Image (cartoon, rainbow, N blue to C red; front, side, top):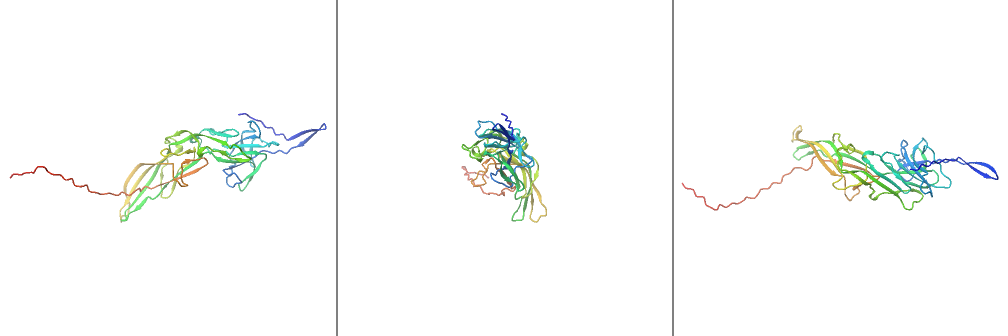
Length: 365
């Protein structure tokens, strides 16, 4: 990638009537004002001052060279800036694009003026909150855009969007005890042994394009169709992948949720019936207490009871989840009811089968 060294000139020399005159010019350092997801003055979405991000910039009407070429931006205690300062040029506007995290292995985008491309990112390996910023078009000076309640930073408005999807899964034990009309009580102890996600796409590519006629100010990038990435490979069985498998034994307590898959960054993907699945492995112990009895008696022990379900929730209401989309945070709450259906009987009597004896039986005395 071409490297451009920009030299800041602190003084301008003018020649007039054969007399050299030095005119001092104020130095105006380019700063940045990062936030997440909000395109206006915000509270509570300020970018963490302990993190850094990468920046590109182009001056207007240039053929393609970078004004700022993938430089790291950090917070120096008072402002967001590059290690080597860049200064606003005179009589020219500048376009900016920023991304996070800076130069992270496996998640570095290919950046041009009109396109951002992420190539074959492996979410199962990186587990990074990959973010890209709206393009800041035609800026000529620092802007005061973000307040976090304590500080107001002046700089190029840098509004980050999440390129991935974040998924979390909780398991909740519902009713685990039933009392019949005659006073018989049945209860269940449930131990969750493992949780496995399978059939997931984990590697993919994404291309973001700029609108045909970008205006000044913040210009969003056009997301791919369906708000999902193009999948490159599928993880059909994640048993051996610790990222998507929880093998800690959880003794479930009624109405108390257990997080079995923590907030995990996933490849944005379309969900299909029978493909992306969750499998829960339980041990279930059944106890019964007869009417008037003081204690429960062990009735049944079941080990390694496996229950699977699709991760697609294809309904017509707002709770439908047919895709893990970019910039979405999805929480699955899975309620387990060990009781199931009551065992009932359906008695019937088969009809008699009539037989006719063709020959009479004769007895002799």
